[in-house]
Length: 130
Picture 1 (cartoon, helix red, strand yellow):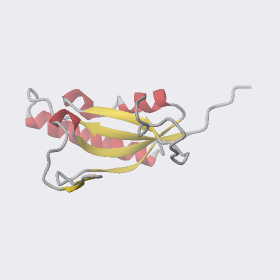
Picture 2 (cartoon, helix red, strand yellow):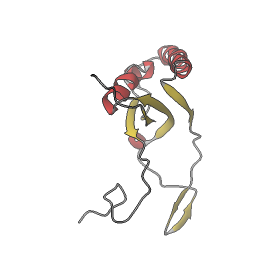
Picture 3 (tube, one colour):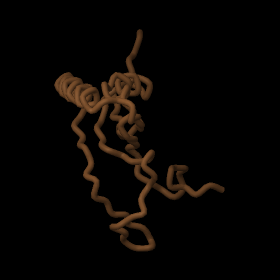
Picture 4 (spheres, helix red, strand yellow):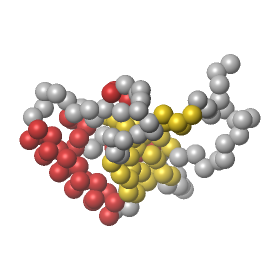
């Protein structure tokens, strides 16, 4: 009996900037294709809604609140996010790779959502390196 893996949610972060060598018309065309692709995948249940992110930002840390930068380098900019519903990280990545904007300079980071609560006793991204 072939039992399929249950579906999970994956966060997709859109990173980077448009390729300087691509015309505005070609980028605008890719954006239009993206929205068609995105809306079809929402309709098919393969994605959940996300959003573009504003260029305004604030950082909150133990040092306080910073609203005027400095922030991450331009290559680290997150321009938006959405969610993919898939049976594996590979399946989610394969769907994200179909994004029409990928050919024009943007990259996509796909991360499984972690349902477990955070704990200092569990290794995570927040755990200091030893």
